[in-house]
Every structure is written in structure tokens, then in C-alpha cells.
Amino acid sequence: MKTVVLSVISISSILLVVMIHITVNEESVQTVEVSDALASAMNQTMTEVMEQGSYGISSRNELVAAFLQAMLQKVDKNISLTMRIHHLDERNGTMDVEAVGEYILPDRNKKQISIRRQVVFAGK
Image 1 (cartoon, rainbow, N blue to C red):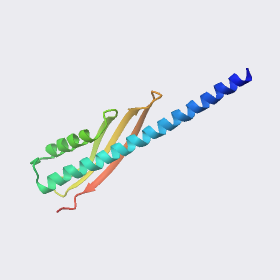
Image 2 (image 1 turned 180 degrees about the vertical axis):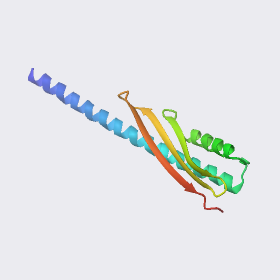
Image 3 (image 1 turned 90 degrees about the vertical axis):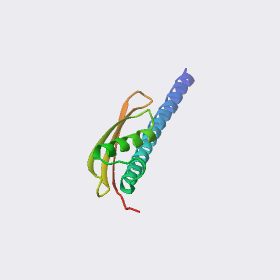
Image 4 (image 1 turned 90 degrees about the horizontal axis):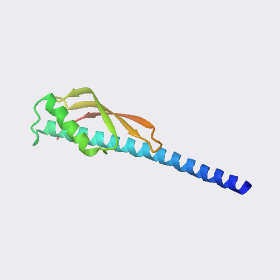
């Protein structure tokens, strides 16, 4: 009987450690993915605006649309994103954006992350 109890405790402990590891790993993966996607989308969009590339972005709304499209292409579908644009100046090439993401952990709890980035286009 004692061996069975020890086995159950051992298995439970191992499962707990595995769940903790998966949760921490998932948080790290989501944070890196959103951070990289945000930086890449901001850089791509501001480069396009400042160099007058093929998009032909000529208004603030087109700039926001191009940024959101670039962001959505780079992010995993398992996260729900809310984008907050704190500052946007297409003439001077500055942008301050925050991405707030919500995803579901393996234990079905929701987790929220927030990444804020600023970019200043350095030019050609």
C-alpha cells in the first residue's frame, strides 16, 4: 500500500513539474513571437512609408492598415491581439505601438502579455 501511495505522489509530482515547464515555455514562446512580429512589422511599415515603396502609403489610415496587415502575417493564430497605437508620425518616421496578446495555457487559464515598441526610421 505504501508503494502505491509513493508511486501516485511521484507521478503527480512529475506531472506538476511538466505542467509548470509547459506553461513557462508557452509564455516565453508567445512573448518572443509577439515581440519579434511587432518589431518586424513596424520596421517594414516605416521603411515602406519613408522610402515611398510599392505600397504607395499616402495617409495615416493606409499606414495603420499596412502595419496591421504586416503584423497579422507574422503572428501565430493562437493568440488574440489588441493593438494600441500611442504615437504615429509618418512625416518624421516615428511610431510607438503596444501589442496586448491573450492566449490560453494548457491548463485552460488565460494569460495576457503586453509588448510596447518604439521605432524611429533612420533613413536611407
